[in-house]
Amino acid sequence: MNKITITLFAGAFYLSGCMNQQNQSAASQKTIDSLNAILNEDHSSEAAAIMKADSAWDKASESKSAEGWLNFYADDAIMMPPGENVYKDKASREASIKNMFAIPGMSLRFQTTKVEVSRMGDLGYAAGVYQWTSKDAKGKDYHETGKYCETWKKQPDGNWKCIVDIWNADAPLTK
Image 1 (cartoon, helix red, strand yellow):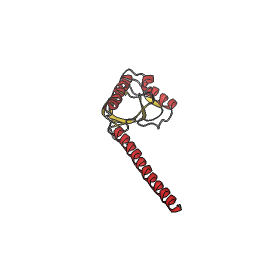
Image 2 (spheres, rainbow, N blue to C red; image 1 turned 60 degrees about the vertical axis):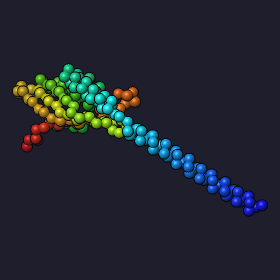
Image 3 (spheres, one colour; image 1 turned 30 degrees about the horizontal axis):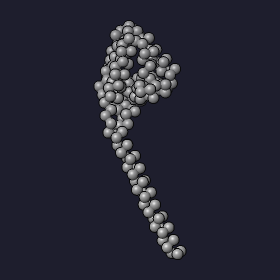
Image 4 (spheres, rainbow, N blue to C red; image 1 turned 180 degrees about the vertical axis):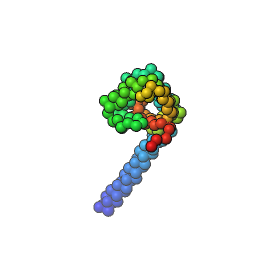
């Protein structure tokens, strides 16, 4: 009797192990399928949203609105303008942008030439070119062209905010 009981118990234990392995395999496949579905999503609407936000940002620049400009940054954004420090907080970004808009004859326009979004659809970047005009210290016209790259992050409310912004001039550094 003991042999029969032990044999039945061992068989039941073996079968339950097989069933558990099949359940784990099915659960793993379901996870893989879910991740593949996310990775294969079309993120063209997110890329279009970044392009639209960047275009609105250019309009804020055209109208010389420091507040409008600053609204495109996430609270913890990093800003790296040419010839200046790295700004990692809202107050320093605000001071820099307000100083920029106070430059006589200042005009800054930019055009996005490329936008890409991560496979998960929560991060993206925009790259493009800019044109800057202003007056120098002697009142003489100054013109600069350059390029930029912005990293954007989708916010919990569905809007996109810039989390890293860097731009620099095309002209080589002078010695």
